[in-house]
Length: 69
Image 1 (tube, rainbow, N blue to C red):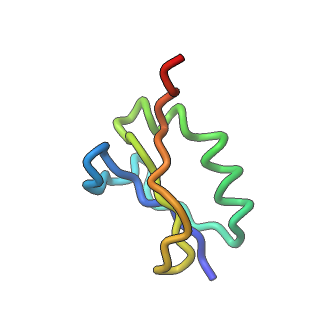
Image 2 (image 1 turned 135 degrees about the horizontal axis):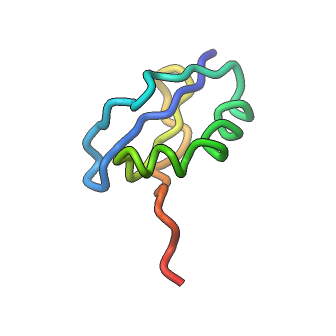
Image 3 (image 1 turned 120 degrees about the horizontal axis):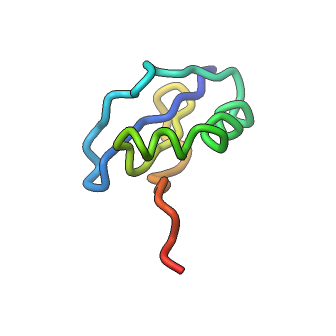
């Protein structure tokens, strides 16, 4: 099994990964990586992400923008 993130604009259109596609051996590894990388991804124009296990959507879209306070 391979875990990957799909990077999207707000309208759901795909965004090319700024540093190429990352593949992770576990869901936890993928979630740790997004937790460490989301600010850089948002700065590179990624608005939201979707997590996949192989080709199966696990969850998302999840916004990379801070919620309005």
